[in-house]
Length: 163
Image (tube, rainbow, N blue to C red; front, side):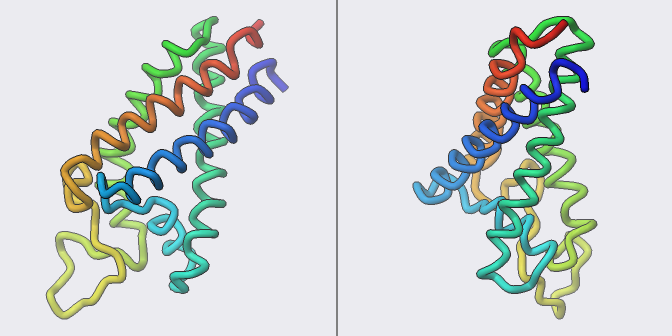
């Protein structure tokens, strides 16, 4: 295993827990209507109660995978740290908010409506819309900030472990 692998995994676990907590807190505070664990979990199950548990597990796995990719980028650059991680987190946040959640998720999600859904269809989940604005005007800001924190944590975890 490359030197960055295990620090990336550990950083990915911690960073994903923090990111998920920040998004959940923002939802509880009324800053967004987005519930990411529910969105991801309903890809796997239609049972709303179990969806959040499945969604958390899926989000954790995705978070670890992204952290390993961050670690590989840090290794390719030959450096890591909180600032560089935060910059990667910002890029990740923009990408996830504009491409992953906005464009790809409605296409692959079996229980989410799309812009092409007819009025007779009753999707379980509202699509996020451009910049996730269907979940509230502050959603993009909250998501971007949480991803910057995620990247900073992964950058911190990997710092000092590159050869």
